[in-house]
Image 1 (cartoon, each protein chain N blue to C red):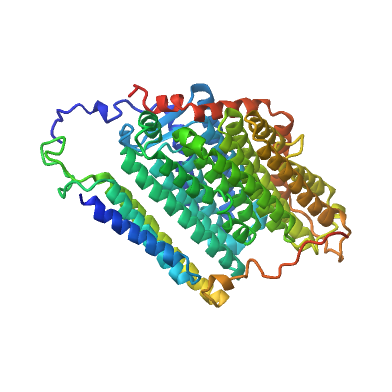
Image 2 (cartoon, helix red, strand yellow; image 1 turned 135 degrees about the vertical axis):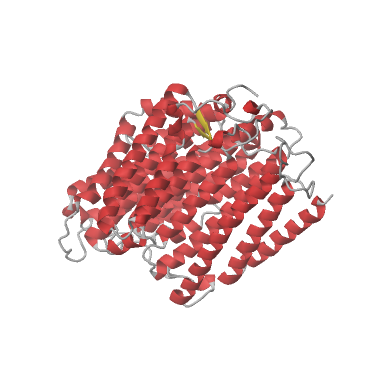
Length: 126
Length: 513
């Protein structure tokens, strides 16, 4: 019954991530994305069922494990996801810093370089 | 190693892979190899295009060979590292996947040729061509993989390559667009990953054929609605479906025009492909339950896209909204689920890949000839080049869904499939969208091409490398509009293969299960 506290923890991660992502400041949004990624990793781990603490290693001279072991597949999935989400975090961190340098703000509402507020309407005739 | 006593044939492929089956894995492998070579040669700017264009031509050939192989033999599966499904990762090429991969390769080849003149030395130094090849690795891998976690990995491969492409140039407006694009797409793929975690918890497998089998067997007791709804949200976000489409008009007009062309052709369609794969093949019953929601989202996407296109003065932003309106038509076809609806969605996706890429290329030429993308300042293009104007008009009609171009047939298929079940309001939305997009693009033609130039334009010649890919893609939409029979029957077979995946499953588990 280890799944239940883990499920609660995943829910907490998601709630905190959503709260942070609703902010208009990009650094908080970024932290929210990181938290969301970690919440998802924990979710995959819990979904793989928490059975045994025995590592899934096959002893010498055997073809199959001799006892029930932990499920290795979620760990492989999470490892992949960690590598990917960490590289994205690094990229986004640089992007946000660059945006702060170039646009002079980290407030998403004030970032109107690509979509100016008073964009003219197309002409109605000529 | 000590002699093994266990029988490995249940988990391992004991015979070598047939030579022709290697084709399944070659498109992404080839792209990664070519991308790596281009990355090593990134200082040799003059070599980049000369290597990338042939590499992408070879990709088109590989996808074409794979298509003929699949047409002759049905779905083809290749397993990685000899591990048999469901233990190892399998690549399975069926008609839908190969058709998407082939259209994507054609679009990328056209983009690579267009980029010879459009991407300058600094863009090449920054790595345009390596990014393009890695983007194609992600796109081809996503279309050909038979494993849902592997699909996630390919999504991330194409996403990180697209980040590189969208920030190429590093202007403030690009940074602004990239922020919105990057954050929202990353959240969408994270949702996809979360759903895949749930799916693994429910089924204990990640192989799509295996999931389809287990979903059919345990439909009554498993919480499959949760999975289908979450996938709809995650992939809907990737496909820019209303109301989660706001990243697209915020970003697609900012990068270099050839980058925007490739994104418009490739990225949203990967989302549509994933929706087709999950909702039609894996969870058809749940899709049926959700069909009204998907149809509403589709109708709203169409209308919002068409109205957005009417309200913009920047040609590139008009086109961004036209992309969105097309996504709505694909969603409408998806929501119907009948062979006609799914076939229409696949056909429209292929049409949209070609036509939207060509339209952005045309917008690039408008900007080059008239010095602006703003409808308030554009003018006199017809006088500059009648050939270019003719090509543009064909593309405008094709995107609006007027006959005899390729956008017409899928709209007919979707409308007919909607009429068959009496969803008249969906048909009305399809026609209203066609009408509004015709007005929006017709106005672009009237203002930018027919209106006399507001100021004397500098004489600019159109380089052949810009006109050639545009003309080639336009020729494709004309040919498939005039002679749709061969493509239509292939697409119907593809839609059939999605709705009834027994051939797909048979290819993954040749010995039965």
